[in-house]
Image 1 (cartoon, rainbow, N blue to C red):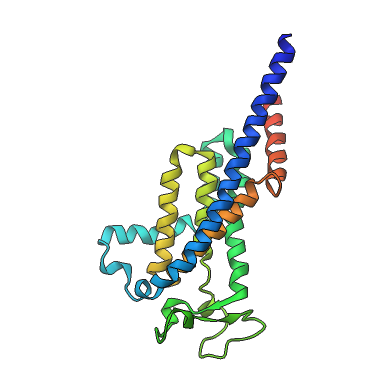
Image 2: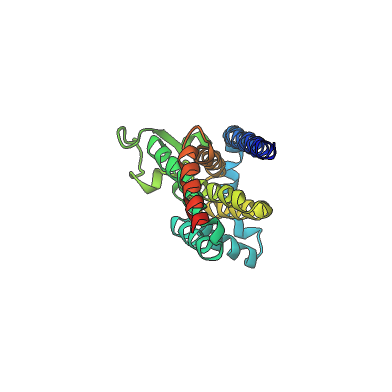
Length: 244
């Protein structure tokens, strides 16, 4: 029966897609865990890197490019990239909300973490003592650190919200355009380097933020989490576009 065979093939294809999506989502969770472990190891390099600005050993033009890469990690830059996809790629327009959510989810988680852990930014740290002295305690809004540092920006080094946003954006773009995945990863690395270069964050802040970026993206694509809502939304828009 041709109809039954066609339906069976479609069902099998759908199951294959679900299995592929599940494996891909699990890979994001594994990468999140891996970068969390790497963040602990990178504490060893925090102070040497923070005390040696990148412009000392990176050529001028490349250093300027690192500065421009903040656009890839900034909320407004993410919105502009989403707008660009809407204008240039009509077929993927319905996937733009998930792309934006993938970027902003990691940044949001990172900003919540900033409220939980107080860490002095490199530009305000006196480099007296070891790297653990840059951590001032937990819940700084409730238990202000007893030091010369003020509340707010100066003690919000951990983790890097910009880097988490850039990693989430890179993952979202890689899902839309797989051939560009290494290019998007390169942009995310540049954005993380920019945060270290301007002495807003330590290396471990950016590596921990990458872990949160992977986690945020995983939640957005996971059909057991936010992915279920985005799947329904995209399918509804796809059916509407096909009907028109």
